[in-house]
Length: 73
Figure 1 (cartoon, rainbow, N blue to C red):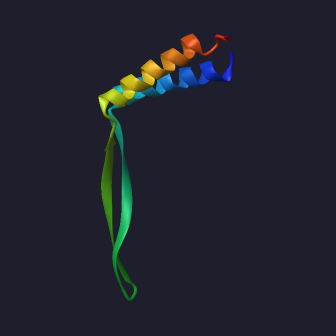
Figure 2 (spheres, rainbow, N blue to C red):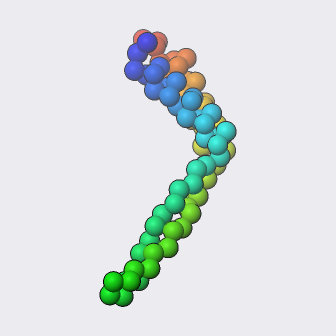
């Protein structure tokens, strides 16, 4: 199996994961104010959403790499 097909398989798996999960979230801590020894920090939850077309495009491109990646000519 050559590198092109491996990249294609990775894209297919990533596309399926993007469609299945729809996105991911993480917590970001920001420091709002510091007055002497007192520090005020706020934790914000950020969400990153993946559009469905990104997952579909990754699957299509990955499939093309798997099918046509090993051909010479």
